[in-house]
Image (tube, rainbow, N blue to C red):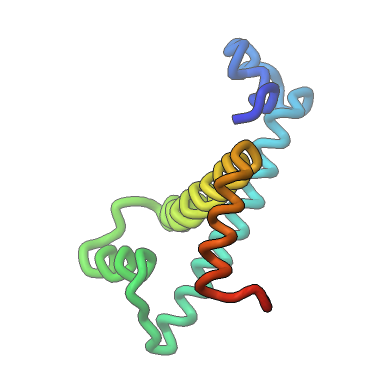
Length: 128
C-alpha cells in the first residue's frame, strides 16, 4: 500500500506477457510466494505435530482442521497452508496499524498522552 510499491504490470497490463527472465517484478513475486509458502507450510507442520501429540487448542487452525478432516478439504493443502498464513498476517496487520495510529495520535495530541500517563501512574505507580 506504499506509493511505488506496486509492480509495473499493475499499471501496464501488457507487461504480463514480458518474459520472466527480464521481469524483476515477476522474479521477486515468485521468490516472495515461495518464501511465504515455506514459512506457512512449516507452521502447518508445527500444528500437525502438536495435534499428533494429542494437544488440541481452541483456535482457528484446529477448528478448520477438525472440520476439513471430517468433511473433506474444500481446497488444496497448499491453499490451506496459505489460508492459515493469511489469517496470521491479517491479525498482525491490524495490530500494527492500530499501534501506529495510536502513536501518531499521541504525537499530534501530547495533552492526551499526559492525561493517560497520569491515569496509568495513579493505578500502577511511577516505580516501573
